Image 1 (cartoon, helix red, strand yellow):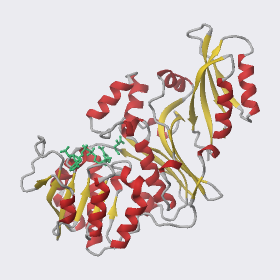
Image 2 (cartoon, rainbow, N blue to C red; image 1 turned 90 degrees about the vertical axis):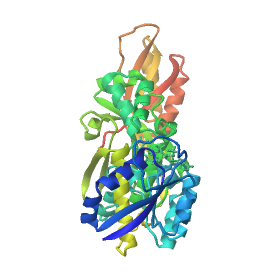
Image 3 (cartoon, helix red, strand yellow; image 1 turned 120 degrees about the vertical axis):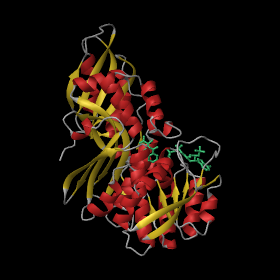
Image 4 (cartoon, protein in one colour; image 1 turned 135 degrees about the vertical axis):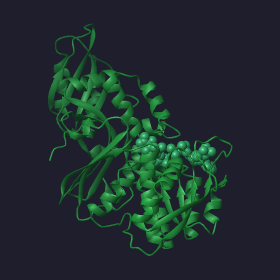
Length: 432
Ligand code: NDP
Ligand code: HSE
């Protein structure tokens, strides 16, 4: 039995789950992996905070870099969040010959390439399974299980907070603000929940997924991000009437010219699709490989125990690598894909909600603009609940280029028969 000394930076939602479960699963981990873990040191911001956790025998410190410099510690687990001090900790730990485990997707999206290069030159593992989809071992699936595949597409519900909020609104009619407060209370949300609701957390995860799937790190400014905060309750009702549900999707797709598209957007998905039934803080990813076809991964994407499950799996992987085991490269670069398709050149079907003058000829004017931009309309729906001068008009378009659709919407918004801005949401039909 080999025993590994571990230092952890962060004892919040995830850190406390790791400490609790490393203890409770110690026998299981030992018999399965031959490894034991001795958590010697934990760095926190406020050591006086009361914690529902017994830390007897663990040194509690306030300077995380002390962990990186402790010659006894072999595995450093970064669970603080942020990209400043966390980056310093990871870099210094790798330089000092330690294995590193992190759940920090913001850090990876910002400097994953640099950190993995440093890990490679230090010949030490940098493991980050918990950074995407909490307890679902999706990175291992992409790296190992699907190694024989070119990844054709990946659609992921990868933010538990947003999925919790969207499910609450759709299923119980709860308000956006109450649902967000509940998600925060349950420990799903980031310290700054703007990262969740504006789509940035899902964007960070999309970048990590794309690095695994396509072997290169997409710069953050090339991933179009839209969050859920601008969705209106009426869009949920219309989605339901039309046979859809709204999910925040991270989408990655490869094209024949070798370009990869990556974006995060609220998306209408058919209620008959398996992703539509993923509720609460659950995450799910649908991955299409050229050899395997369609695969699906489902589980809890946030919270203390699910995330701890992934972190501990990485601690075992790090320990095995330190004791001489072979570790697959986390994201091997390859020549298949290396460029990003601009968002304007991606295509989708679209849901559009307009406020329009309730008079003959209005629909003709709007459909003429769509036609001028080469966009077909597959369905039109005018709810009659609140007749008046202006009424809602709902349209579903055929698949169109984002650039053409945005051009059409800009023109439509200027029509005298249209009031205010259009609500526009992508529609994903998951065609084969
Ligand atoms: P929390 O805010 O619950 O915990 C953060 C911890 O880090 C706290 O213990 C805090 O100390 C400590 N900390 C923060 N800054 C410092 C500092 N400067 N020096 C020392 N300690 C510091 O965050 P989470 O546990 O939710 O998240 C941790 C990481 O895991 C983040 O990167 C997050 O994105 C990621 N993650 C979170 C998931 C979740 O479900 N919550 C799921 C997957 C990944 P103190 O306790 O004293 O305040
Ligand atoms: N805030 C994140 C979420 C935590 O809600 O999904 C898990 O990464």
